Amino acid sequence: MAKQSNNPSNIAVIGMEWGDEGKGKIIDFLAEKADVIARFNGGNNAGHTIEVGNSKLVVHLVPSSVMHKNKLGVIGNGLVVDPRVLLNEIKNLDKSKIKITPDNLAVSENSHVILPHHIEEDKKAGGAIGTTARGIGPAYTDKAARIGLKMYEFVDDVLFKKRFGSEEFYPQYKEYAQALKPFVTDTSVLMNNALDKNYRILFEGAQGTLLDVDFGTYPFVTSSNATAGGVCTGLGVSPKKVQSVLGVCKAYKTRVGSGPFPTEITGAAGEKIQKIGKEFGSTTGRQRRVGWFDALIGKYAVMVNGIDSVALTKLDVLTTVEKIRICVAYKYRGSIIRNFTTNMKILQNCQPVYEELDGWWDDLTKVRAYDQLPNNAKKYLRRIEQLLGVPISIISVGPKREQTIVARNEFLF
Ligand code: GDP
Ligand code: IMO
Ligand code: MG
Image (cartoon, rainbow, N blue to C red; front, side, top):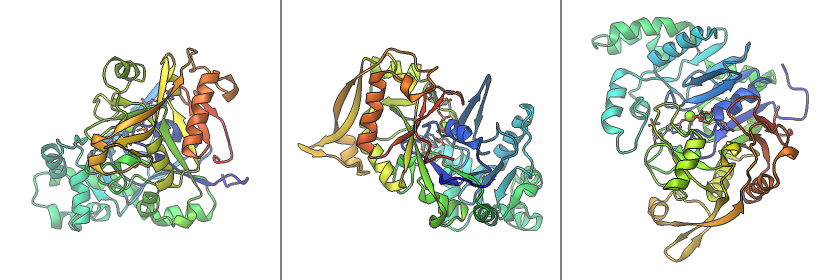
């Protein structure tokens, strides 16, 4: 389906915070009109949830368009791929009558392979960061140290045997390699052909801006570039070709794992949002920490990603919260900070400065048009737009595909 309007023909969908913003849901919603859906970073540390009717799926490696037929999914060179997990995911999707074949999934020959020792190492060393223990950090470490195993080597009998033939895992992994071989290709050629043909493309971000290895709350980050720049390096796409960036942002904030979180809500108020929002990790099942909306983070994500518009998720969860807070500045040693910083000393010792807005009591989960939202919800959205300096194009009021309000269409397909 080639582009026919002035709307963008490709959109990068990027998490604006610490992951789990609802990227999977938004990708699934937009994928209806897309041809190609491409992951560019991370690995199976991601857990993207999709709900359509009574079906619910969490995908970790395969792009979040799997509920749609006739879409091409791409796993780009920027990923680290656990072959066992990918094959299991394909097998499990098959049980849900979703067929993943080399006709609808391409895996980059330049992606890196997660091997058992990466996972062991992550289990031992990842505790302080609270990693997902999936071997992500150690696999990226090997990539940067130039000793990693690329996918093309893995699926080549001779090359794989030469490097790892004496390892205990070799016989099992040789089988995985044979099973994956038909999926492996040069995805940068594939992506650029799709761009040349003006196909509609979604670049599916994993994790989020504050987990980015360069722009996140280092060292409490993942090991890849989750920001928009990662689209280019993680897929072999020129920055000149990315037409639109959609930031996915929760109506409140969450974080799973360790690290600073200035607007964290502790006690009963936090537990209430956590409970209504079902804030448990899609990958590890860990409880997510909950916090108020932080406009400094929002503005920062808009800046480093070049966000054109925002998809705001989980607005329904704030129903019945009497007073809703938005953080507009940090106070640090007597001075006021208005721009986000990744300086740990400041983040760990600052106090958030809040504005307070009145909440609403109406159930939003059946609302399908902006005009039907309660006035106080509209006021909250408008204040966020004002603070972030970009419009909200999508408002999500529930986990299901249909629980979605398109407020502005010009940044979407
Ligand atoms: P992702 O990693 O960014 O794809 O997000 P996850 O799937 O890990 O976590 C988001 C969670 O929120 C999932 O359980 C979704 O089903 C759910 N979700 C997404 N959007 C909404 C929404 O608007 N309202 C509610 N209540 N849940 C949502
Ligand atoms: P999606 O794509 C939320 C967090 C981990 C840990 C840190 C480093 O579903 O939004 P890693 O295993 O990557 O080395 O862990 O990053 N983390 C995520 N948190 N959503 C994710 O992905 C995450 N991927 C990694 O909890 O704090
Ligand atoms: Mg997730």
